[in-house]
Amino acid sequence: MLVEPPKCLRKPLFVPNKLLMGPGPSNCPPRVLQAMSQQTLGHLHTETTYIMDEIKEGIKYIFQTRNTLTLCVSAAGHAAIEAVMCNLLEPGDVVLIAVNGIWGDRASDMAERYGAIVRQIRTGPGNNFTLNQIEEGLIKYNPVLFFIVQGESSTGCYQPLEGLGICVIGVDTVASLGSVPVKMDEWSIDAIYTGSQKCLSAPPGITPMSFSKKAENKIFTRKTPVKVYYLDMKVLGDYWYCFGKPRIYHHTVSATLVYGLREALAIFCEEGIDNSIRRHQMCANKLYEGLDRLGMQLFIRDASKRLPTVTTIEVPDFLNWKDVVEYAMKTYYFEISGGLGPTTGKVFRIGLMGYNATSDNVDYTLKVLEESLNHARSKFK
Ligand code: PMP
Image (cartoon, rainbow, N blue to C red):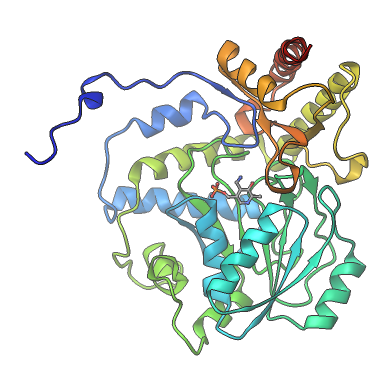
């Protein structure tokens, strides 16, 4: 044998039970885990496609849309950003991207790879855009697509979306959906996606998306083919039975992820959007109060700009942020995150998402954080 069976695979699989209070993924509820332990089915079996149809109905509810081109891409959230860009842009098209953290920059990188001309409006980390700023950008650049992130998880910033709807709009709701309103049809959003692993508390790797009729028309009247077969909505839409034509084999969907997402959507629908938003906001407020008692300073001072799901907290002087994060993980299997992109080294990020957004978890988070901070301070002396 050139390569022997590796010794490491002779040991039993080890997966610790961690409490994921970072900016995602969140823990899956037992009902979702149970669903995912069921046997694999074929990707075109009637039982699988029936569940996929149920998922589509659930996605229409979470996005508040009647769009027929509503489906999932079989990949993480990044693939949905790619899907927006590669379906709605052709080489030479101008795209305007709002950047106030890592996700706008990453979307810009992707759009450029598909040959689009990328223009940006930018504001500082922790700040969001006013309608005026957006309108000025739209008038200046006249883009075929405007892309914006509702919940900037790198900074914990919330972006209101009401009142847009001028050109084709793509919105990232990965970190925000479930904690703030999302009204795709009412707000004339043309392309949208969310993360399965955040407020839905499903496993990562299957990403809900929806495209408006305007976006669909654009996709069907392209002059050039979509560059990525796997993400081409014309063919993927057939697999998800979005155009009323018989399903075709596009790829082998993970039946296991389909079961998990189906149950997660069922749980979300049982609670209802408004209750979910209330619960997330209530937990966030409780966390802010607790952090204030601990003498911690929130990175975003203006409460109206805070994303309930991701709270960014300034790293105090005379302490190494890594000591805090590592102590919590080693001592309690508890995930607190550091910053990302523009906030690296500057903040801690605490997530309150889906199944994990409970009053008890807020209490526990504050306890672990306090102890971890004390530990990190004592190391510094
Ligand atoms: N957009 C936002 C706002 C996110 O928070 C994330 C994940 N942190 C993504 C996109 C990418 O999602 P994924 O990691 O599932 O690819």
